[in-house]
Image 1 (cartoon, rainbow, N blue to C red):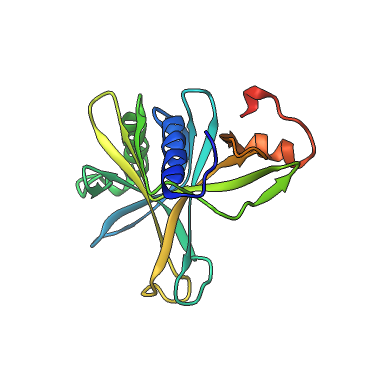
Image 2: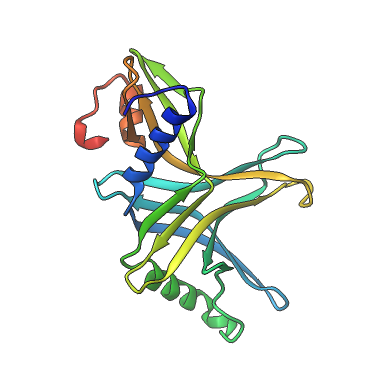
Length: 210
């Protein structure tokens, strides 16, 4: 694909990146949760690791800023929504079994699941690194939707709160540790963080590391 400045060119690049991500599976994850008698269980992911059908490793993280004071968010992560509702193991689950039930539910839900849609996919206009005519642009998304082999649809969306005032307006997104690489001719490719790191160190990454 070629880097173009017009809207059609940008949409084409977004479509190519979405195609690269389509079918990606979840291979690892980390999460946190809290519990109150009135609200029940609130769960969020601090990390979700994917592998694309082509073998590209990609990690998802929740990121964001406070719009009103421009500070990083004190609490941020990725929320899991199933059929429009935030995941919860249910009020009938005994407190002593919450951890066990959450782990079992997630492993069952994620088994055989693959990405079917990436909404709000974007890449920064300003590169984070440039060398030898190549530039690297960070990738982010608003929501990522999966289907599993049991026919369940679920999606991930970012969430976060201002550390000084939880009522402040925030801007949140899912950050991908992959990059849009653009060469001196305008040709583009989605590359891994490992590829980017080796390129930064002055090496010439192997094709399979992309």
